[in-house]
Image 1 (spheres, chains in turn purple, yellow):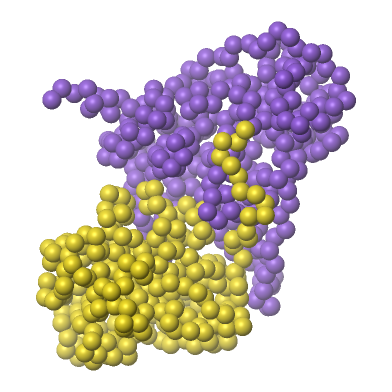
Image 2: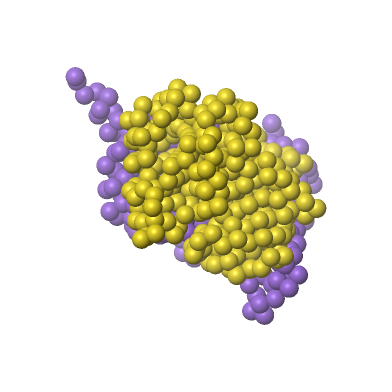
Length: 340
Length: 283
């Protein structure tokens, strides 16, 4: 694989080159510490050195809110919303966020493949960028390296004064055509160290989780948790949704929309008549963590958490998923070594 | 490389568009419950199995899951027994014969008919739990050669809450059906038994090995019904239960109906008891 060198000053030139071929979505600075993926209007606005965007690129394939159909109340009829392939370049994606998209591919494609999601996934090109782990990243513990190029069409590895550019697919090669870049010969730098770790790999976590249903950590976490659902909202592998009808102000018609929902919210399991099947926050915390490390993991062998650190970084109550999992690991090992 | 292969666009389906079906009959069963008869376009068959459910929607109000109350042996239309308990069912209650509602489905597994064939069938239904169980009961009644004895155990809050009263009278009069009913609180006119549903189970005359049982009722009922069935000596492998959860999609995507690792809309709503007895959230 040929590697090229891109000086930091030439990132704008690369974005402009790509933007001439397909729409480009990339991280933009939104505040002192916050970043968001947005469509690039001015290539100079693109930020490649960022810790994480609040909402991953999931939002382009499974939008926070989307219209499934438009209905006419007089006719009592409907038309299904037209969904288009994204057919765009997602530039500056971190490896854990692409890992999350791959997991959504599994969930929304499995059993009953969903047209809306799968259509939007068509034509998506991914340009990755390496990153320096911050105080929240722990993707190394779930098998995702900051310099992992797999699944990307093009990957940029950060150097002190620029980036190593690799075209990893034919699509990636073609997109780089016409850009005059010098070859990079010197190899790749060592990656930065993680400050956060889960102490065991998923293969062992399966055993740990199987013994953790009644661990006191759920109730203890619930004492801090306020049930706001932020962790669900920012998680790149969460895909649960609710469906609601909205009537227009003329009351002639409206839309049936779906929007992201979260298992940490009380109403999530509520049914007509008032029954709530996961009434306690402890039950909901367990469900959230088991969704990431047990239920789908037992099926696929893979953690369904990608170690982005968002649920911890944005938690309104200071709850850390790494601390929860490590507590389960610690309690499991304590039991395991207790002499009879 | 994507380690989790994505389905191709040609395999992808529009999962959420309903077909518009006509309400052909509405029968008031109790103060809160109606029986709606629904006909699909061109009289198409719903093609369901006993125990399955559909998603019914009214534009501008929303969509919710409902058990199918009629047996697939009842052709050309299907029935939904619906309690008026939320906004959608309140609006449905005000609709008239001839109006249309959106239908998606059938969804869920329904009962495994092969497991039931040649067996005695015991139905334990509490309150509105009779609605889905009726699809099984009538299936068994309509296919007498495929099944042994039919036992029906039905409990209701009061005698005024009893559903399908004409059918109940027929089941009671049918010498081939072992029918038992009780109410928690009877009115002055009530001549039958009073007490919770579990009081009916000890007195049943069951061929324990030959009998398969299906339980459906309010959440509180399952544990007590299970205890009664187990102390009666019914093997766990002969017990099935139909569970209720919130559902928005019916196709295993929206996440609401998940019980531990299982999705009720995919693996349920009818579960084989040994499969869910280790799932703490199930009951």
